[in-house]
Image (cartoon, rainbow, N blue to C red; front, side, top):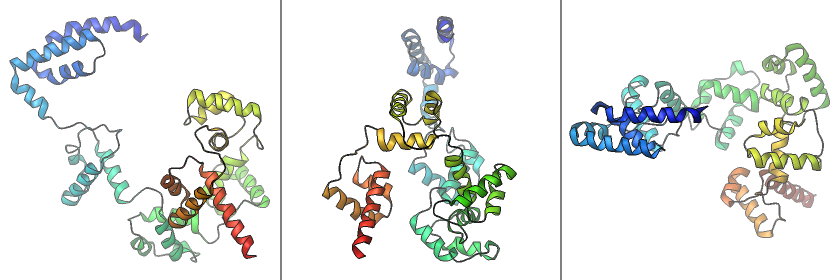
Length: 332
């Protein structure tokens, strides 16, 4: 449809460009820069040069216009520091700050500021350690001084986020290991009563958080097929990934009409089928480097990045676990 209209669009543009006024410098320059049609590109450039010769003062205004920001582009460190200084000096004038960041809305600016100040990223190991020390033995959340806990953290976190972390991760009544058959049975019964109201289900179950209940339902109870992948499944998965890429497993699941869950398909390809993943036997030097870095960083992903390793996270984790088990055996 679009291809059939292109000749008409080009014809109209060819008539329009010579009539552009000096107030249309911006549009004229834009057309000369981005057009993929040589005739329109040449006409736009010729008209811009003519307008530049006739109205030099207008081209100066175009050149002096502030840089437009692409709202989809990540914030640079310079822009982030600039925003922090503006807020410190003038307060929360989000609408006013739009003029400092052309192309970004007040909502976008405010959201970025809050994400920086309150740090909406993952919890650091230091923060988790502090929270476990402060909250690990406290049973009643109504008796916790959340403001005092907030001041103990190195980065400012909202009280709501701290409470959510407590409920999901370090509440003393939570079970952190695998689900028992009894827990799975009760979860199914509660799902039939409350539907997907994870808050009510968690309160009734008592031993699992909302997040744990939801993940159990998504990744295990709703999975229609379990067990080892067949050769046919692997071949279909490889073909679909080659067609759609490694970030489209939802589409891949529909394409191959698989009864597996999306996490199952992704884990299978990443750990067993991806040709970019190193599955060769571990060398002695590689293992020593893995154990050394993990003892320092305590994070498998950080170790993988530091080693610049092509091994999967699962492979590295399994190697660390086998080493830990072998050390325990030696002590016994």
